[in-house]
Image (tube, rainbow, N blue to C red):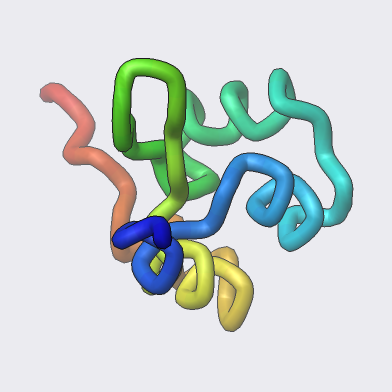
Length: 73
């Protein structure tokens, strides 16, 4: 039993939720701050927090505004 199953989406699940985008596209979106960042779960696995992905799905623009990093002056 995976203890993270109820807390994280797997990479394929996140790709499907994002509209069947590629791994590279998700990575670029993460770097640009327009998609939730992945979390390292183990030496060979990553996951995406379900709460962040679910918030992004509800309103992507609001998620970006809420999670945008502060711009250096």
